[in-house]
Length: 535
Image 1 (cartoon, rainbow, N blue to C red):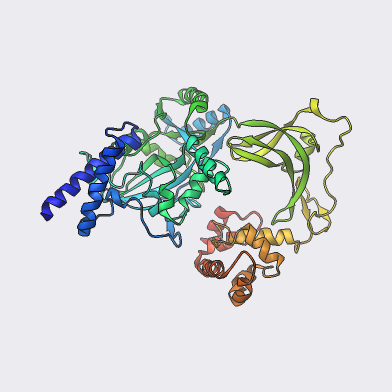
Image 2 (tube, rainbow, N blue to C red):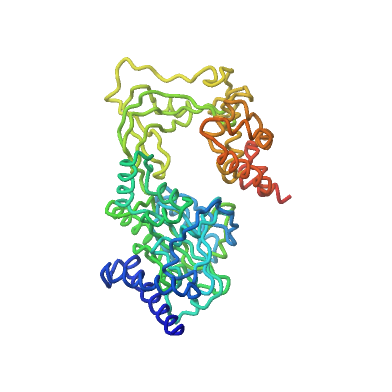
């Protein structure tokens, strides 16, 4: 009997994997929902009666019952680098020229063109064909483990499809992909949240990223997430091309974006980019451009990387979506360096899936160049489909009595005098103890990529500074001596305070490069901090 049960369990698992692949990856259902549910139910019943037969890659183990109390840090074996951006065809030609200059003169160069999916990048590790761990991209070098949540996504194989490929037997494989939410699913999710009086997600990307950081995998399982895999990494197997890599991913059971194409030269790339930009309007998911990669893996290795991005790939961004709205006023914000930045306060308008009520104006020179004034009708766009900005004024609609915008003469937060350094366009608050600067420095210090203190975000920093608990970096590490006082603060409570103090204590183990970056020294970004820490 036990051997018969084991055999039946293996049969059921393989059947369910095939049906999952057909339904969630190929969108070709082979059986009815009822028949599928009956197979799953039979498998569950056998595993309940004989728990020794349960394996981590069984379809019944997709949704865990345990809450994730903390998302552990994971160091990526191969950094998940970001991509350099291009916004014009000329920049694509420049990319092609740089690639050619970096390779022997007689070499042919092919490119693979893929949609740039607007989602959350993840790394998924498989050992002997079974999913073991999954992590967020994080800062590219260190992410957070989200295994339990990724396992709930039906288009993510818990075990590779069986095939004759040697890859099925490889010990350790990493698959990288973009997790996203379909536009219609995103709209339905927001409708449900609105009915419950919950805060709405700004766009599908935010909803996908937010879902992956939920503590309860059962709640994640109720959210309709999908994945497009874009690369397979193995230290045991050399691939010849990116195109071959994508084909193997498909053979192993992953969804690969169907609009991917192999192009023989940069002219074919440009032509296909135009096709993809036109197709964009009819897609069921959000994209914000295309990714162009050198196809040959050997050539990729020759070209190598710079600090944050590969030399062999580039993102070609589509033209940003635009909208018209009224500029109700201009406010001035003060950052951690003391820079005073103008912000457009807008009549709320829907743009690229989110409601925009504020946009950056960069600096006073930009305002003067575009002649932006209060009560103007303006054109806004999301630069790279992410950050909203004012790009132009509709002069025909301007009130004849409107006046040019003038910068403030004093800091809008502390009232101190402003100064403008030589050869800079920004104005700065001269008071280094300005509350806005203090808050900005503390927020940066605690942020992800710096000391990464979970829970110490903008709202809590503002609250603790206003109540006198925080003024300097050292004050953060003295909060443990003020635990009882913190618990008395409205909106906190014992559990929140304990979690915060635990996160603060954990931050003491951050590497020196992150500490250096956290200090917010001007001109010392994360890359420079890493190099300085190595010397």
